[in-house]
Image 1 (cartoon, rainbow, N blue to C red):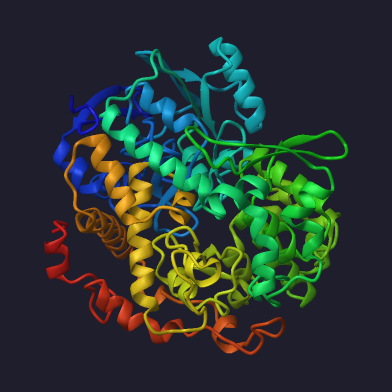
Image 2: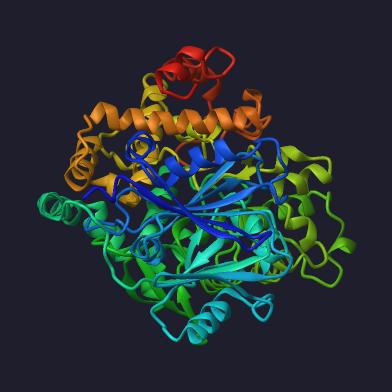
Length: 602
């Protein structure tokens, strides 16, 4: 046995067309897990952190998780790791669907793309046959068109496709990489890096669906954990029924549902765009799941005009809905469809438009700049659809929107109106209303992000226990644990949503059962800490200074003006020193030599 210990790497040099194979031994896999951890280690070892993310010197790494393609519940995730163009930080974007499992089935645990092709190409993996092919006829096509055409040429509609749309080709700084048309490695601009390399797509069909692992031992654990997932209130009831948009009314009622570019923290029209509305208005057709998923939180949706697709997810619906002041569910859903087709991160796309709306309404964007486009006013359904297309194609003011909200606001002399951390836009939770989540935002290794340490779980949902969202005591320790555990989950290739029902001991049990490794829970969490610290060190080496562990001034200088948390501000600055200390970092926010030595990162 032992294949699961030894990762198989496919290295693709796009400059000269050479394709080679190599292996990574089990000890390194055990140290960094797979997925996010091993991919980040390879990137840190092989590139200069100071390079331009859109230069040929950057690398794009597809990495499956340690349990991807096994029987593990939700074990279908893969990560795309690179230096992100939106932030300049290490980018590690997670996607579900079926592509990750198919990549693992094909015997390619990791694919490293380096250099740049002279012309558009795509990578074809058909059984053991691997080749680069001309993608000139695909360049300019949308994600759905690219997927359909590649499957037709491949002769198999079950082949799995990961590709970019026009946004990636045009190097929009928050372009995503899409698989199965609707699943996204969405944040930090990984699609722009793919576009900069003239790489349009990867298509894979394995000969056998086989990953070596200890099946008998693992199945005992899988049966137990699947039962836990199905009996949990979130993973067994809320998510299957309403998807991630089950959160709309919950978060709004808690007073941390941002609207109008975070100028308010509740949205009066939430009932018009919530997960419940998606059902009541007849848009939702069915739920669906990714590979090996018993939760099935995906949404098949059809609009009144017959147009169909997936989503929107909670974050996407909020970004185009409440954050833009739009209460039109049809327009919000259509905007989500457009993002999927053109290959855009829905969070940054929607919140960049929201930032533009505030800039426009305050007179910092002139009407003449819009040319013949609709006015950028909060509540405009027409504006969110029009400017989403414009940014993907970099047309008109869309060329500025394509740089993200920070660069847009900075170009107008008002960077403070960008609700971002390290130039990546914040998701749908006001950090003034959840103190731990605010700390997580500023310390996230990829900028404004909720899925690097989802403190909404204890602070709002009460999982694994209910914490007072305004309490400061103990929050740094909670944030560190959640961040380390998330790094573990990303490393083993399971879905973050399983953490609503499973804890660190459960992940340790399934990893050991499937691989034969003999981790203790503490050792597994230390692997997560190792991954997190590696990412932090990469960012420091890239020039991302600790002074950038900061929220926009709005959150510390302007109290929430409405809702049940009216009057509060973020106190993350009070929490940072303890957080740094818990991580074994100096007062300056840099990992100490002793901590690097302890984690084997020297």
